[in-house]
Length: 234
Image 1 (cartoon, rainbow, N blue to C red):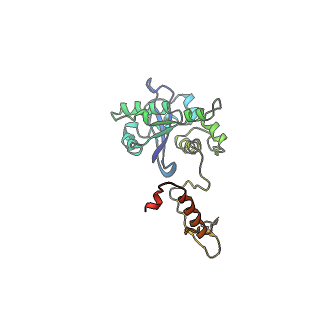
Image 2 (cartoon, helix red, strand yellow):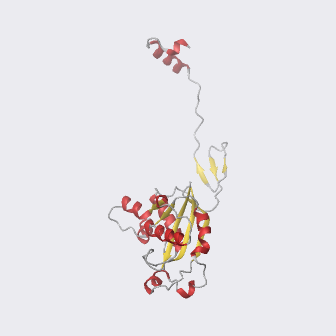
Image 3 (cartoon, rainbow, N blue to C red):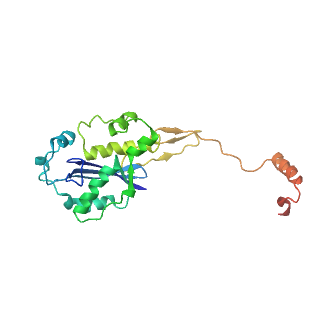
């Protein structure tokens, strides 16, 4: 199962009223595990960046002036997202900005039905508790010490960790890397088996499958008590 964790930074809160995207960050998950594939772009909003927005993400109009416009990266974004579900924190906000920009660029929009909102997941799982990304990182002991400012790719990486925890938590020993190969070396002569790297697994003695004579006798006695037993017709 392929999923895309997505985060955006913007010039404000009103996608329809003229605010624009300034950054998009996406992370690919396969069966809830990050693959290492990402989509990350700064976007020229073609307008000013208000002070309030700059204080959140630190991206100035001057810095963004030579970055690509959204229309120039729209096809690449759509290609990366594909038809996969999109995980976002407060999905309505991010999806609205993405789709307004796609409409403006004359591109197909992403159906909101494909969005998975981690805020809604957190509020359902922890009613009444704070549901911000920082609060959830703290709850799940996820290191967000590098998050001095909001950043789309960093926030998407943190959100991927939070999403996995909201889904039930990582399995013991799960390594979130692009490729994980586990080699198991079996050593039955020593009475145990070991799995690289250094994981010792217990080995149970082989279970006998042939019935013992007393088990056969007990079964025959039981069958004899059954009227018209099917075993006697074979």
